[in-house]
Amino acid sequence: MRNPISFRTAALLAFSGFAALSSACSSDNSSGSNGGGEPDSATNPAVLVAGQAYNPGEEYLTYVGIFPEVPQGDVGFGDFREFGNANVTVHDGRVFVEQDGVMQRFSVNEELELVDGPRFTWADLGIAGANATSTVFISATRAYTFAPQLGVIVVWDPEAMQRTAIIKLDFPARPEGMETWASDGHVVGDKVIWNVFSGDFETSVPHPAVTLAIAPAHSEAPPTFVEDSRCLPGGPSFLHENGDYYVHGGGFFGYFYAFGGIQDSRTCALRVKAGTTEFDPDYLLDYEAVTGSYVNTPWIGVTGGQYVTRAWDPSVPLPEVADDFWGAKTNRAMLVDQGAGTAVPYPTMDELFDIDGQTRIVDGVSYFQLSETGYAEGGNADVVELHPDGVRPKFHLTGGFLLTLARVR
View: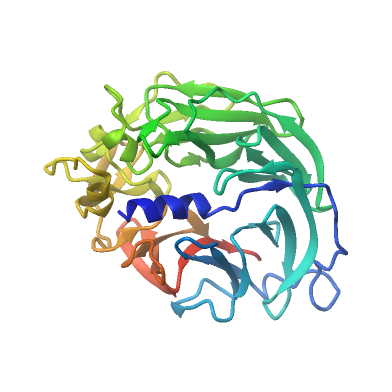
């Protein structure tokens, strides 16, 4: 696992707080460098690598580089474009960077450089905490930014780069001291679903239920909130090809299971069946029953219904203090078949620390980052391919950690 304080800080700062905007757009310079539209994806492919440098007590720095394909070997930030503490996403062949409450769109020219495009801001709505928002692209002209700390969903147009509506939230009450953010978001049929986490890192007490925010994808009607107390919150979610939505209540790497003090709590996966907006009462995948432990790192998609996780060795007692929990190397890598409800040992880099819980897919291949340093100043990350038979090293990122890996074209 990783250092507890630095990891939490890194997780919360991985996405800058969204400030809201009065829509002010610059001139649109987002076409290719030759002025004739976007370069051809077949003859001029582009893959984005974005990373962040961890600077304790200081603002994060974010770096964005473009490669013709997923890089190999050693990769440093020297030739990357530098931003502040930013969130970087890719949609419809364009790059979106949010920093200090400003969302800017970029294109990528034939020389694989970022070309500045229009921007807008929403600072009049306030500033959400880092990693407390989640943006989902619905179409070329419609996107949602979910900001529970601000009590709103910002609706905006990625083509015009303007804010088009504000949807107010009636978010369920949480005790004072609990931090709340959206772990991830997906377009599910005609809805957008966010998996929302709430917990108090000072007391180690989580909200004792998985919470979903479900909003119509094509209207400004307010979202509904659905909760299920069968699992602790804090895990990824996945949308299967048949439209079923699976959400993992993993207790944030198992931390809130180990220290939350909630009687009879457990970690598990739940399901919302395609076409419905409620949890399936007949489905529950119990982490302990599958992996032997309720303490699992976030499940990372490999292929189909297979996932990689690292489960706490049940022969080793859980520690009494958090420092010993985050620094322990007692997790066993496992390949889980969700449909079969089985797990087998998975060959991986057992001596390396997990960095985050994100599944990154490029051209059908799942990528994951591990680190020999953990979150530390001057740290590094090894980005690997995940396959059913084990990992394949891809590139070594020096001076920081992976934030985004995505194909642009």
